[in-house]
Amino acid sequence: MGFIADCQARLAFDLLANTWNAVVLWALRQGPRRPGRLREEIGGISTKVLTETLRRLEFNGLVTRRTYAEAPPRVEYELTDLGRTLLGPIEAFGAWAHDHAEEVMAAQDRWET
Image: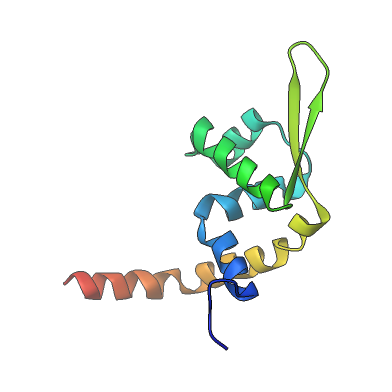
């Protein structure tokens, strides 16, 4: 099996290749969140990057945006059923990183010396 441009596996890799996609999906696993709360929970993400990430996830059907007619307007984001299907792979990848981070960092150190 090759990884041609329109390959379904490549689509999945592209979705998780962006660091913020997986981080935002994981942050939404507990339920709907307002953008400000997401930024607090994630840390290190700018408003601009969070907005771009949420739009990208919404475009791909992984997140839904709900706007409330209040003053001031309130917006919340939450995972769709499709978005929830990625939590298992994200958790597995996180567990792999936890189990093998030292090995990866050692390899990087060897490369640099």
